[in-house]
Length: 337
Ligand SMILES: [Zn+2]
Ligand SMILES: [Zn+2]
Image (cartoon, rainbow, N blue to C red):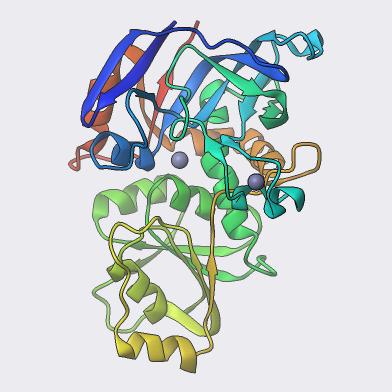
């Protein structure tokens, strides 16, 4: 099969690789859409790849085309997505079904080969089925949407809460759209007009600009950037007894000055870390909620996909998404076949 392979730092190549062989309990998924995540940029341009050569990609949707002998063949041709984390099933967190906390996990597109390829072998346990009417490219948004669902689930009594989001990437926007669908009053901290226009086109109307001296305070701040400035702003804009939900992966050491730290204490601010999503396989989890949300909001969520590529455009894809002069939110590799 063909795959987009990271051979070394900054060295991507579209090349022929062996099609994965199925082990017991696995299904072969033909990949129709695979999202490019900001963490993939750190693997290509930074130092976060665990090994080379590596096939990236953990946000994908496709169709089951084959099953191992022990799997019921009636699921062939079904549209699917997959939880990209492969738990050990032995540690205390796995036994409690808190798989995202597994201490010995593998992960598609990072700790093992991923989905920027024609096919991927996936344990049936990791598979969620998509409704027929959900486009593959929207299905590829399931993973970041499940993270957003997890983040918003940290907020108790979401309806009518005033929420401000710092950041405007895929997960920030999905947090905003999902919180809005739950009845929250959502504002964004914006740093430039292009982003403001884009967010307006998604139906958001409230913006916090950083230069204003007097700011409205919000009950909840969602930090989706992972920078010191963004965290400091969250502390500045949150109400007394409010909550800050920390989602953005840190791009540097996160330091607080004494005044801001005092503010957390004096205003009794709650801080919630968010990592990955809750996956339960057979029970209702963040993924089921994400699939439902995407299915019911296809028009607005489709606007998040600003860039589409075919797999052999891998170098162009990563270069184009890095450009700062226009809006690039989510890039997706699409295979219509
Ligand atoms: Zn990701
Ligand atoms: Zn485990």
